[in-house]
Image (cartoon, rainbow, N blue to C red; front, side, top):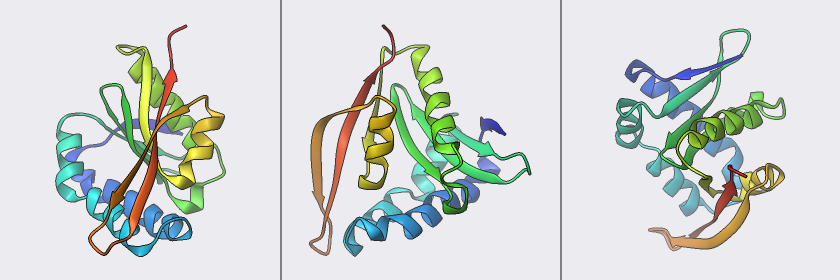
Length: 154
């Protein structure tokens, strides 16, 4: 397994990992309007900017397959997704640890916005919910999430 920076030529791969994961997992937790909001948020434009800024990483499994992705913007972990067929194998934990290591070089805390399906995972990794947010989507559904933090320097 390796984690490496994504190249601009891999924009569609990063988007595919995010979108496939959202479509497989999020409908069990969120109404349709919230799922659509997540899909639109992880757009070509957002991903392109993050790749161009050098903030997007891919997790490649031992067979050479892209299994997950994470984006690190300053002190914040964003766009952490592991494809459904790779979930439950520790890849998400590896991506979290990798992101925290990068963040710890310049920040004392890691921050993130946790979707409902990811909240328990982050809590197990030592994150604490500090704010609750909800966004009213175009069709009247709500997208709810927690803003979480974890102290990295002791």
